[in-house]
Image (cartoon, rainbow, N blue to C red; front, side, top):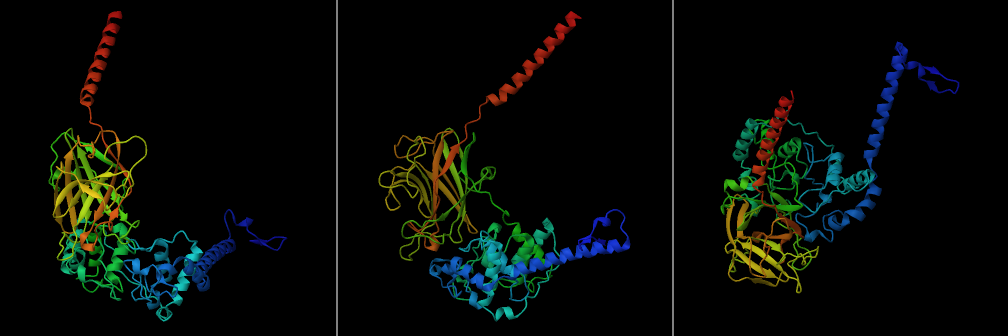
Amino acid sequence: MTVGHSGHPDYTGLAGSPSPARRFALVALIVLVFVGAGIGSAFAQAGDAQAGKLVYERKCALCHGEKGDGKGPAAELLVPKPRDFTTGVYKIRTTANKVPTDRDLFRVITDGMPGTSMPSWAVLPEKDRWNLVAHLKTLAPDTFKEAPKKLELPKEVASSPESIRRGKEMYEAIECNKCHGTDGRADGPSRPELKDDWGNPIAPANLTMPWRFRGGSAPVDVATRLANGVVGTPMPSFIDSVEKPEDVWHLANYILSLGPRTLTYATLVSVTNVSDAIPDDPDAAFWKAIAPNHIALLGQVIVDPRNFNPSIDLVSVRAVYHDKEIAFHLTWDDPMQSVEDAAKKTYADAISLQFPPQPRPGPERPYFLMGDASDGVYLLRWQNGKGVTEATANGPTKIVPLAGSEATAKAVYANGQYRLVIKRPLASKHPDRLTFQPAVFTPVAFQAWDGGAGETGTKMSLTSWYYLRLEEPQSNRRFVVPPVVAILTFAALLLVVRVANRRA
């Protein structure tokens, strides 16, 4: 390296075969670049608490309160309740003590808390999110006087049938099922009595839905939750409960085997054409061969009583038909089976499919909340304890059952899950009952009620309109045409060969 006339270093001589001095200069330059980058990164993460306070007031105070005590104007409507930052208690952390790292706080702000009202704030500039971290730490200064202590997990164990089997053994041995249920659907016997450190009811996680795990669904995320516990909740640390430290990895692998890591939601409900008889048993092997359509449901918040914290947010739909009938196989999770009992003031679990009474051209559809006074809907409604009924509706409070129901249903409930088959003739002569037609896009919507959670009437989960389409029957020509074409092609080749031989 030399110094040019301008007084700046000249690196042009570093190319080729550098001398020791040149090699030293090159290494020094690289080190300076990386050190500078590290300083820049640390500076970006430092955050400005005062600037973060301004962001907090605009984006966070509505739920968490101006003082950060979890008592914002919207707090009483939310389950679980917003975090009280003044206590310095944070559920999601990667540390062995109760002090989260700045990165832990940043990640929760960025990713949100699935299954709660806390959204992802990735829409905010990164600088604003780091400023929020700095402000949150000022709300519980005593907590952050202690330095975060790194959590040391045992060496990771890859998922395998053997690891999952061992994890299942540990799941039962340390009684995870008491809260999370036998199959992990949050239906354990301890569920009704669970409360957080502030006395609020709190539900255990549904382990079959990893995409909703707070803190992430990677194996290291799950193992960290198991090793750490979730402070402020009944979920303890299990690092001292397992027989061997590596068992936290086996348990994590088992938990992640209970459901898909991600879920693809349907935009169209496909109805498969079949030639065989359609079983009414929801557990028949027949249904397992049909691809499910996963439908997301939201709380009804348009009319009173509103449902801001819906219990049922997913229903999986399998649908088939043949020339005489159509059948819908519905699967959804519900942590407790419930029937209507006026004396005990309990409500029934229920679900319904909604259609226009008759096919109609164009995009016009009835109002999605069970129609209105001028334009009604047709309902296939199942209620636990009463079975299936057909009805018309001109609004959620104006439901009229149809006499002589043509629909039948059979339901199974086990380990926090309903499986239901509803069957009905494909065609109907009744003007208020829809006739299903192949290759026609038919509007369909869904509503669901968890009676055990106090859902009844307009307090429900629901969807807006989807479309349902019956696949066209496959013609037998698909079995006839290919052989005929092959025979004709072979005959043509023989003819060509014969003509060629005659000419020769």
